[in-house]
Amino acid sequence: MNRARFFVIGFAMLALFDTLTQVSFKFATQRTGEFAFALPWLRAAALSPWIYVAIAGYLGAFVAWMTLLEHAPVGPAFAASHIDIVTVLLISVPLFGEHLTAGQLAGAACIVGGILLLSRGEGETTAADSPRDAAPALRLATPPESPAADRARSTGA
Image (tube, rainbow, N blue to C red; front, top):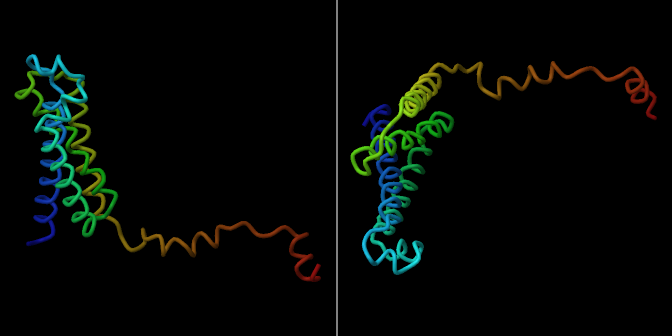
């Protein structure tokens, strides 16, 4: 499998697991029927099968994330790991009847655009951008010692 395909599949799996987890939490905390009113919401959520789906989603997301981090640069990977914000927003419309505003859609477009720019920018870095190559330049940029410190070092004081 080539590298690009690995990342597309990996981040899609991460988004799927993260979205499944958030939707499962929503289902677990919904109060429906007599059962939810008879018990506090926390106890009702703990007894919901959706909590176990959410836990499984967290475990799947953890495995997907650790696998991706083994191969992907951390900056773009961290940005791409937040695509679930957009997927949860979009799936909330058909599942929960939520309505999207123009601001929410603009925010989602900014998130997707930012992820695309960060992932594209990673491929454009060069060897000169490496922190190891920057170290000599940092040493040259260190200000010289004061004349008093230079005299004290030369006299041994």
